[in-house]
Image (cartoon, rainbow, N blue to C red; front, top):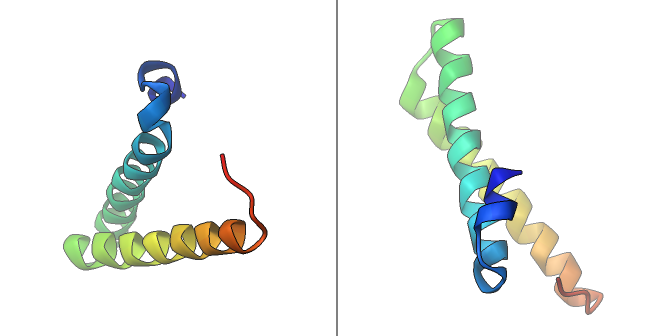
Length: 68
């Protein structure tokens, strides 16, 4: 929520997307650490699927002509 309050309107979409990916990677790495698995591999996997999900969401929004 802080990112939304601090970011300028023109960069809001990019700021939220990049911050979301950063926290996805951090939480994926933390979960792997707690589970005793490879931290970097888990962070990369969660980030990859997060980027894919965001890209598909943007594609569906563009298909239906919906823009923020």
